[in-house]
Image (tube, rainbow, N blue to C red; front, side):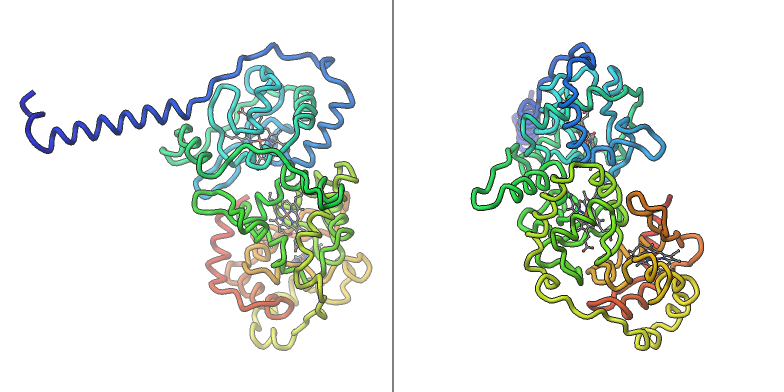
Length: 432
Ligand code: HEC
Ligand code: HEC
Ligand code: HEC
């Protein structure tokens, strides 16, 4: 081996060998063993009360939102969770023996919820919010397991994730976990009430509210130091739930309770976008649990501006008309029948006026744009009125004109910049 004796080539070989060795060490370290398959347990293996408890917990955990596709069966998977890196699909968590979790033991289920590791040992992407589910108690995991193992099995394979090549390599997730994740358990705060602690346990754990309502770093990890400072979900802005809440009316526990259980707070607005399904699930969850969540988040927002002073409602209709005449004309034609003061929807239907909702007071225009482009589903158990989608009726420029007009007329904060580009982007990213 003459070449090896001379100069840089030898060093190159040594460095490559070291790198290979380090990579092998990494693979060994990242490895998780599979947990043995079991024969699918019969329904009778689970007590009815346990299953009912699990059902409530599944609603609080919002499991169905990510584990059901638009036209699919509940929990059969196929919903694409959007991340800045690509789309990751919720898998089939019905007890189908081949494509679901029918052959999973309680131990395998528990490991996946607490450590983000699949039964076969694969690391799972944190699009599955195990960074929160890790807080769930043993008893609650048992109840969830009982609930899922007694659903109707559905044979369905989740679509392949759409990720760039290096991120498809799951052992890298172990590196992410090393940086940003530690399996943990909920710890009570003895200085707070039992209800507060119940709300904290559910909110920080199963309900994973901060997964949407907190900012994330460039590697997609929640920034705990900025908890509840506002975050993103599927092109929607989830506004802050802390002292920076933009709401113009205080979020008291009672108002939160009605918002979370009906999808509408008459002192604020309707729950739109990804918040809609959250409220549809909480509507059928245990009332005391939702009350606990409400008092916990009212506590988070106790120092928000509106909690101290509820300002009079703005209506700068003249100023707004002069600044944005095109937007004013569009509003009069397309929106006033429902939203102008005195409209039947508000006068008789008791729906909140536009300036009460947070979207027009937020740092970002995304929620207002999304609502206009895509409309709103009716709140829980309400036949209507509901807001139609304007994506096929208005151009990007028209939506931008409307948004600018509404911000000036009813909103607060500086004008939003680059509205036309924002609308174009929102339209592309939320194509039905
Ligand atoms: C925000 C979306 C989201 C929510 C909410 C969610 N999941 Fe998931 N879940 C996912 C995604 C995405 C995956 C697949 C991750 C992957 O492929 O790495 C997954 C995977 C899983 C797995 C592993 C399945 C397997 O085959 O490896 C289990 C078990 C699971 N979820 C259970 C639940 C339960 C129980 C709930 C409710 C308490 C829940 N999930 C709520 C997104 C979600
Ligand atoms: C899947 C993402 C997601 C999850 C999970 C989620 N939210 Fe939201 N939430 C949003 C989005 C997006 C909005 C803004 C929608 C709108 O304008 O109506 C929102 C709006 C809200 C609002 C209205 C704030 C305001 O000032 O208008 C409250 C309150 C709220 N969420 C509380 C919660 C609580 C409590 C939980 C946990 C039980 C939760 N959210 C879980 C996405 C989410
Ligand atoms: C058929 C009645 C109807 C029409 C027409 C309508 N909306 Fe709505 N809109 C609603 C309902 C219902 C809600 C949900 C209740 C609420 O939040 O006040 C809503 C909510 C909103 C919200 C979010 C709530 C808030 O306070 O921020 C905005 C923004 C909005 N509409 C803008 C518009 C614009 C702009 C137009 C015209 C392009 C329009 N709407 C046309 C019924 C309507």
